[in-house]
Amino acid sequence: MTLSDVTRAELAELAGRYPQARSALLPMLHLVQSAEGNVTNEGIEVCAAILGISAAEVSGVATFYTMYKRRPMGEHHVGVCTNTLCAVMGGDLIFERLKGHLDVGNDETTEDGMVTLEHIECNAACDFAPVMTVNWEFFDNQTPESAVDLVDRLRAGETVQATRGATITSWRAAERVIAGYEDGLVDEGPTAAGASLAGLQIAKERGWTAPPVGASTSSTGEASTSSTGESGETSEGSKAGAAAEADTSRAETETVIEQSPANTAKEGSDD
Picture 1 (spheres, helix red, strand yellow):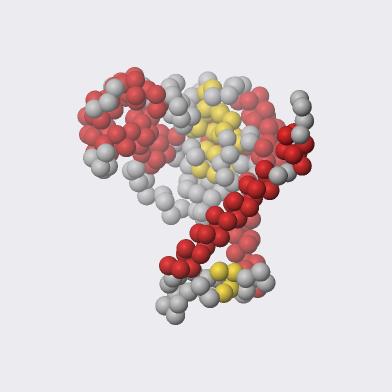
Picture 2: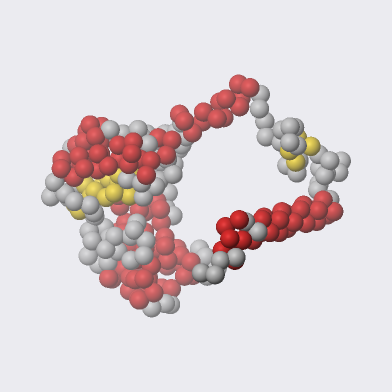
């Protein structure tokens, strides 16, 4: 494929959003993926020319981050978290089931071009483990059965709604959003739910509130404002005292380490 004049203009527009143009390289590569289906050699050359850097520098970035793909992607990117918690909660089983069901390996695309499957690192959604993503949208509390049903619906072209996010469009459309161009779906679906909000709910039920800014907490758990004036601003003296205390604590810790029995025994040994 050849990058269109529209895409080239948008790449230049992205570069103009930053005081240092090369800071735009990450979103520019996502835009290339949106237009081309992966990071192509032409896309690398165009980004390099716009930013005034070498193609080798662009290629170094494109091959460093796993979200940039050098092979054509399917209509949908399906990621299965196989990091520790998701793995032990069933992520490994889900990934193995999907590989067999789709007849693909890791980072491979189905014959119909609809799904690219990849095992991915932690998505910071451990309270919903095991989790999957479709085009970077979350699907929580998955099982091997629900995962198979999900990919079948995607391949059939059915409308699919993320657990905590927008209606699924396509991987290319998602890449365009990541590049910095809105798709109008930002307000679809809840952004937080369930376990993520449990602590907040408990706090509301028990009337718990965070201490005011600048207040310290005593050993009894009660907020103290002794280090602040009536205006609520912390005095410079208090800041200096806190810094001194922090430095002293560090020095004391290091002294304990230096005088630990293990070190003393080692120093007294002839070995």
